[in-house]
Length: 228
Image 1 (cartoon, one colour):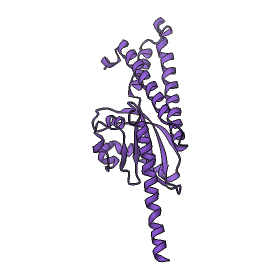
Image 2 (image 1 turned 135 degrees about the horizontal axis):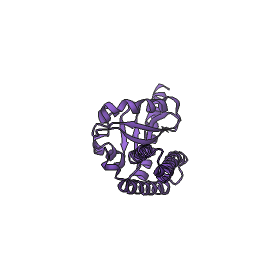
Image 3 (image 1 turned 120 degrees about the vertical axis):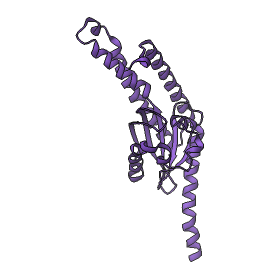
Image 4 (image 1 turned 30 degrees about the vertical axis):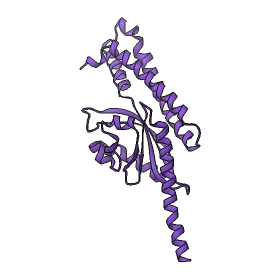
């Protein structure tokens, strides 16, 4: 009786860990070639268990420097910005979509990301890890700030009335961010249903790349990168 009970209780954690590992590997496989969508799995000790190339590139570190290390090991002073959201998902088991600003160790100023955190569950329903999807939106934020500043300089002038980019680009960027957050959430829900994820990842990755190209082109035309 005791031997059987011990074997059963020992098998459950192993099965949970195996199930969580399989889920994270499926997600990693579908997201491995994404150039703009970062993906990671974080365990209860806030250590990176899985990381794709896109997220490693965002953090300016190789994948190997993430695995087995904590957020504080990797992100340094920026880690406390991310840790409370992860702990919240572990605590209540609910997905969270959020815009985050932080200064990473390899960067000199704050940058911006849209991130979705979601629970990764074992067969028993226990939250064994948190998955994170991240898309950097720093270029869009910089362009929006510049256009807002430029519109202020043109205040009460005839040029201001004809300065369509201020209004329309602000609206377009806002709508893009809302759509991006929705699509990240949709990826999570499809993953939970074991729906076909790869096609959705590829479509979203292409849309992000297209938006980045558009923002870069507009920034070049307005000389945003040369502004103080």
